[in-house]
Image (tube, rainbow, N blue to C red; front, side, top):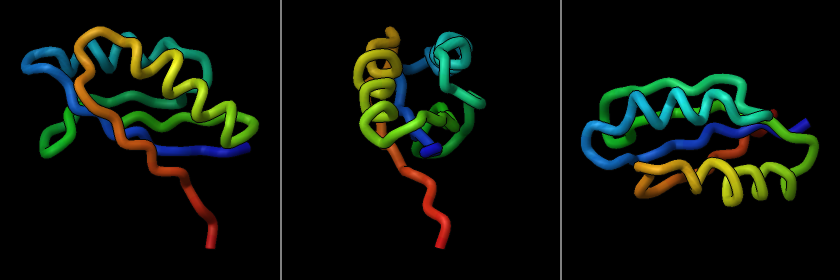
Length: 77
């Protein structure tokens, strides 16, 4: 199992709606709207890195109102 944090920037006023829509995507553990340089932070999981990448590109980045994403895989050192 691979997990990652997805940091999302949105259009002004869209953070709450983006978080609500993303929370319903299969594989998303949590989606929160936050303050700071990013507007939404998502924790997601998938069976493989490739599957996680497909989720981000095919599902998360297609949500209306998103301007940029940054995916940060979780590592266990």
